[in-house]
Amino acid sequence: MVTQKEKRIGEVIATATATFTTQCYQLYELPPLGSLVKTRNEKLELFAVVANATTTGLEPGRKAIARGKDEESEEAIYKSNPQLEKLLKSEFETLVIGHRIDGKINHFLPPVPARIHSFVYVCPVEEVKEFSQSPGFINILLNTNPTLPQNELIITCLHQMSFAHEDSHQFLVTAGKHLARLLGDYNQLKSILERIEH
Image (cartoon, rainbow, N blue to C red; front, side, top):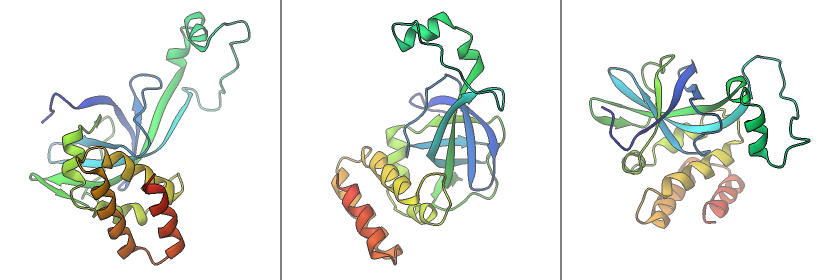
């Protein structure tokens, strides 16, 4: 069921068990890196973290060209070339880190992947808080091969989720302790924890 605070931003255009790619309805209206988004089918909701974003031409292999030599601003480029809105697309890749089925949130991969053309929503703050009450989703982030370096994705994800908690510091402390139990590499752990605190 869609709540009023959910913002629909695009549709799934490529999908696999652990990932999906979303094309945004509006050019450049991309959710922040590390933010929690979701899609659904009739039986379950899939939760995923934004792991990479791109804006490219609609036609494969056709590169954008510079158009602003005689323009005063970047906005003027789009006003002088209104067709650009129809020739470019913004997309983002996500890592699936959990799902909800029969009302219960699970921090492991869903039994089926997202569907092509499923709507994608930015999760409202209350849902981010609910999903991140348990740090179990960190296990998936540590055991996938994201487009971005793993540490960067963990740091941005935890930062984004911390904003949904009244005590963001305590959330990060709990997440850090969970990471400490999972990681065997002290240097990697130290690097993540130092940057999470900033």
